[in-house]
Picture (cartoon, rainbow, N blue to C red):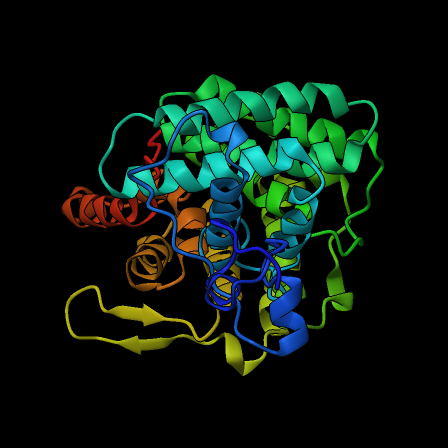
Length: 361
């Protein structure tokens, strides 16, 4: 009989088998059609040095797969980004360290810890060191790693310079690899939405000239494609330098809105002055909030800002809340003073739910 180990999944421990600790399911559990579960990591009792503790790293990776990865791209209906980086993490140290740093920091922020834990910072620095070694040899892996590291820095709120550097690095890698927006690689649109959030919240220029890319147009068929196309159209709207360019983009946005299926309509409940807006799918919430952000730029009416605010308050998807953090400054700029207390309430709710610090420009 194989020797029992102190590490491994709960099923292998119970059966006294040597576990290969594969994620999300070990080989024994796959072959025997059993549900593979690992002991939940205690986020408050992580032991240093964490880099040498493979079991805890794998448990943190499992936490990423099952929960924390939702913050990356809520329009990614097939969870392509989460699945791909999870596979990369099994062979790439920098990606694994970046993921684990985000998981630890995410839980730390939700527990109201203002500073990253020593373990999260150790993982972050290890990821940055490893990233430098693959920048010129594995651009695709470096792209994913950099995108995740940007999320880690965004959690810190005050670290705007480092966050901007990571975002700039990601889009530079995207440009260097000559990746096209037609690719199924979800990192492209994850980066686009990060860039949009930064531009809307801080009024900073794009790190990448997204407006140079043609939107998906009539080729956008699925709900997720339509949501991605709206993100591109918002990038075009922000980058419009002349009234003529703005009018052309506004016409394309109106055309996009006319093509929407009924599934994009929210469930509205008017129980108060502000009402409640709930979307059936996360990508519907992203698409319509992005549409209303574009409308705010074209027609600064309070109704558009209030739609975004109510979506942020009532959405149950963590990734949607993270995305809408970047729109709060835009909304508050277009709302009268009488709505500011309500906006501040929503911002506090977003910060509590996501761990992010909402930037107000």
